[in-house]
Image (cartoon, rainbow, N blue to C red; front, side, top):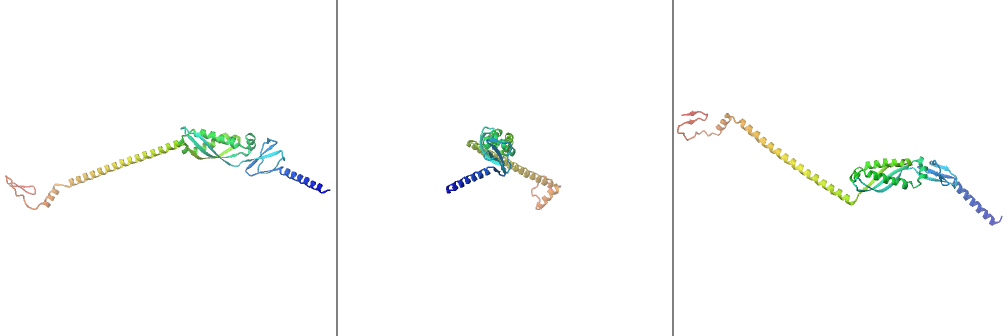
Length: 268
């Protein structure tokens, strides 16, 4: 065998070995943890799915599409009108998963881009329906109710397709500048009204307290006068007179020459 024939033989054997190796690799597929494998044979989607692990497939005629069945996060930015016709821009974080048993039907009926085709439009539709039930201010104060309503509404729409919503978080509500300004002005007005009412109530309380203090002082004075009056008997008055008398009788005499005794008697 000539040298050129030997080289040709080695090349053919090398190509054959390479083809054999490629064929061998195409006979097997690995489905990663948290995924399922959808088998497609010459463009036809087979029913059932491959679970995690190593699997054998027909080389070149079968393809295995991996579907992620773990919880996946999707952020959606959308706008909706509130009950009072305000534009509410909302950013949502949607956590969902694909039912393993329906991975093949999702891929068959929707394709690999089911998130864009099915999930995002459903989020927009359900959010608009729920937002219309609340005013713009109520949307802010009822975030948890809106989140719960989104989970329930989305599951009603998507469960039959094999998609399950596990959680919805409202990252942000945003409103028009005019609405924000109106809310700020309303809050300022409410604060001013509360301050005025507080000052009014304080003034009323102070006036009532002063009136009560005046009444108490007047009552105390009246009670004291009553006690003094009650204590001034004839004997006490006479005693007070004796205490203050200097012992001298009046010098003036009446025309009838009547002298009044200190003890109340009279002398001619």
